[in-house]
Length: 303
Image (cartoon, rainbow, N blue to C red):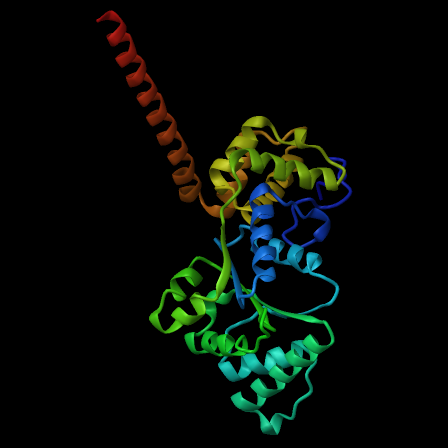
């Protein structure tokens, strides 16, 4: 409803994973580089973790775009499966035909290993990407490790990318999963955007929709970082609501108080107050320390 008012050709802050709006911050680029490096190594696993909404899916989509053409990718988005169900899903993703009446761990494993060997013979790499991997059961992870046992003298025939929330790191610390943890050749924890990156992120999405960062005041951009903590998904939600409120008020620019009102509607007043309060606490602490250092320096000079 606000698109024509602000001269936008599209909704710049939709939470749909539109690749046209893909913004790769320096942190996302570094995460991608770690994954690509890990897949080139001889080990079977690479891992990407991060809080909800930090852009892990964005990195995984970019990773898929940059894989060599001779790569077959199996993507699992719902890993809340038993070991048998997971192996069946992998067969589906790799286009392996099988007879349901023969379904068993051994049967599925044999079918997958035969597919991996066949891909290798034809110069095809095989990559399995599992999103929300923190939901995998330990016995399912162990089954994945067994799949990576097939290897040549130089490399594993199956590379597995585990993408999940920080709980995945704790899961892999379990004693029964230590063999799998030792096979992870690259791991990266994706942090939220920094203050400067939040402004760049908002500006990028607006520019793709033929808009401009000037739609948001500088104070609003600062508030966006304080309240969202640099989480891209939350930035999208709050910016979209703020543009809607600004349109209803017929204002030319999104002011800080309107953005805060939008944040209160979505996150709740208590959450917004808490997050803004932290910023002022840090600011006052910095001023206090600065004054203390200045006073000490003046005292030394007078002495």
